[in-house]
Length: 141
Length: 340
Image 1 (tube, rainbow over the protein chains, first blue to last red):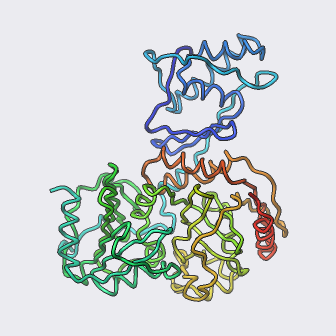
Image 2: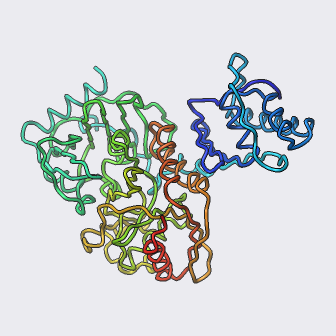
Image 3: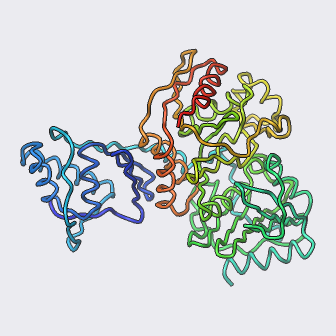
């Protein structure tokens, strides 16, 4: 999947810390982690780069074959779209410059997904309360 | 009328011109509580017993709280339930900064905070029906929204330490977060909370204790004999047991301490406890989602605030052993070594 994409805010929020991207989908309750090349691709998308520019950044740094890298980038973008983390953004503007990626070779990105917040959203953190209805004032008893 | 107008009018009518006032220094800021009766004041400030009082002439936040049984005043008219199929433990009625409103269908409470006027309101139908776990974590949503506007962040974490500083225990339920925290308290370390604490990155990373309460699973009673002896609801067996540390060991509750490390407990089943490095991103993933999903608000800002804290404080995996005394000793040594 080629083109320009953007982070699907405001329901998708993220922070990059020590090179690793932590991404939270507030709508689904899932959160994600991207390291290495995946974090680079995520940050480049967030900066407005299109996928061609991202692939070019890896190949220009001599990190691997364009076909292999292109397939990996497209695969990650497809995953990000399927999770609702990015959406197509044909009208966006490109960044002025994309910093070269780190590393000696291209490692395919891996999107790590965590779904354990679903329990937290659905269950009382203290205990499962009884069904006692919507709060109501005493004159409505 | 808007929800804010309704709650202002209902609160003023219920509490009147002679409220029961308690002014408490929370995270270094003075909060003036105006209650519609002594019983509710006692019920909802018990968890703040470790915190000092403060002059109430110019509070940073004023909270009006009443129950309908004591005051004879009805609660404010509520908007339609926005999510009838949603979780019973909270409904977000309004999330339009600076106004936030949260209802808890289970205990039947309403919390409203208007950050622009530094005022908040709390209503429940009957003080006698306030669950003990609500007494243990009173005004949670009010304080969460208010503190975030004051450069602090209420987080879902445990915290304990010694005179030289302390640690945060982060992770979802079942990770060992609460057990590790309680092990430190049982061993005599200073307690800052087992579920909700306040953190700040500036001027130095700091933890502020919010509640002196804690919770024990019924099946943990034997592991924590001292804490078990403090439980106020031992008769229940279908929910967690609650205790108030300040009621029994006031010198064991911290008001605040410098944060030396963030610990990610992992239950090992081995007797001894160990430490190993953890990435800041792992700590962020352990702390931020559970905080943000429990207490909806300005999520992007809160994620950024938590990340800022974790950039300033080292993270460790705590391989939590079954010897709880050893666990507490490992944590004490880490703090005394000044992990930062």
